[in-house]
Each structure stands twice: as C-alpha cells, then as structure tokens.
Length: 289
Image 1 (cartoon, rainbow, N blue to C red):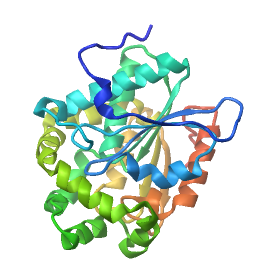
Image 2 (cartoon, one colour):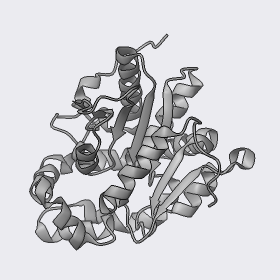
Image 3 (cartoon, one colour):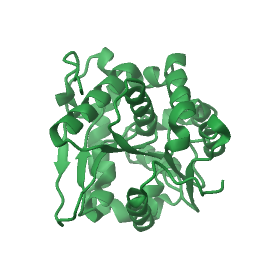
Image 4 (cartoon, rainbow, N blue to C red):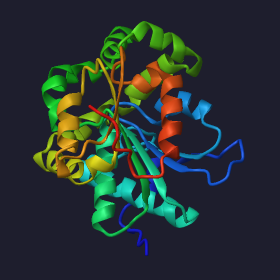
C-alpha cells in the first residue's frame, strides 16, 4: 500500500503534466527532476521531442513561483516532497515510475529511489541519472558557486560557459524558448532562495544519503554524463556506483559536451532515453566504463 504523507504539500512542486500525443501500448510515466538554479523548463527540448509517454514536470522548492520557508529548501524536505509526489503519481496511475533527474535533481532522485526501496515499495521502474550531484562534485564546483549569482547579462553568459561545452551554440538553439529572458526573470525571483538550497546541498547528512543511494542502487541505475563537465566528477561518481557487488552500471558519456549535455546533444539524448526505456532489465550490465 502506498501511504502518502500528509505533512508535506506536493502542490508546491507546481506540477505540469504532458500527455502523449501519439497513442502507444503501455506508455511510460516519467517524472523529471531538474537541477540546481534552473526549473522544469530545462526539459523543454526533450518535451518537444517526446510524444509517446506521460511526462511529469515539477519545480523544486526554491525554483518556482511560491514563497518558500527555509525548511522547505532543505535537502531532506525536498527528498520527502519528491518521494510523496512519486507515490501520488503511482497511486493515481497504477503504473511504475521512470524517475529521471539532472545534477542536483539526479541526487534527489537517487535518494528518493533508495528510500522507496528501503520502504519496500517497488514503484520505480527505472532510475536515470544525468550528471548527478554528489560529494565528489565539491572540489570541481566550490570555486564556481559565485557564478550562480546572476545579476546581469555578463554574469549570465559566464554561467553558461560552465553549464555548456559550447555556450554560444547552445544559447542559439535555446533562443526559441526565450531561454535568456526567462532565465534572467527566474534568477531575479529565486536568488534569495538559493543560499538556503546551497546550505542543504552542503551538509554531511546530504552527502551521506547520496552516497548510500549510489552504493545501494547505483548498479541498477542509468548514468549519463557530459565528457567535459565542469561541475561533476564523472569518474568518481561511476566508481562509487560500481562498488556494490563490483557490478558496473549503465554508463554513457557524451563527447564534447558539458554539464547540460542533454541540451547540447538533444537528438542523441532523446534516442538514447528511448532505448533505455525499452530495456526490460532494471539496467543493462554490458556497458564497459
């Protein structure tokens, strides 16, 4: 039985559901969890390409249109919120969930999946982690935190240079989504929340939960990375996820791409996710690192 907690309000996740425009047998139900300092619009290119599945887009606390209390910006609370949301989607649809998260959202997704498994709830069909945040990210990211303090066009452009391997081309591709204008509005509204989110991201208890999740279920997950990611330590993350039973997880590296590789190589990403969704096992084990 999926007992949904009443002490967290999943409505603050600002759910947006995209229904399939093409009828297929057994469509997937995919919950997409964005990363730090962005929102559900980061998935726009993928959403435009995906026609066969149900997509559940959410805005994490501190990244949406609500006024948030500091407690709602803690890692523990956000994990609880996303976990209850996943339970609610499963309860409403009666279907298992594909949970896909990027960066900070990947860390959240891994902990959510681990906690659900520990609770004996078999409701995650697949866990897809795109450049997931972990303790191994600190060394690479610590000197770049100040770049997320976006106040003008110049600081915005500097941030893009660490998000994308080729920022110029990526910004051109995103222009039809009004990416720059909407991003500037987003930063103006949410900057005050980010300091609390960063505190929650940096606590030892947060890293412990992420580390345990990678250790316990990493070998069953799908890991996708950008080759030239300036924020995530790919190799150490993969090593941690491979430690249980010495089984290597599914790993895919996008050459000449950065942290937001799913935008830089959107066609390749869409096709790879489509293939991943077709696998019948939790995760294929035949990928060499």
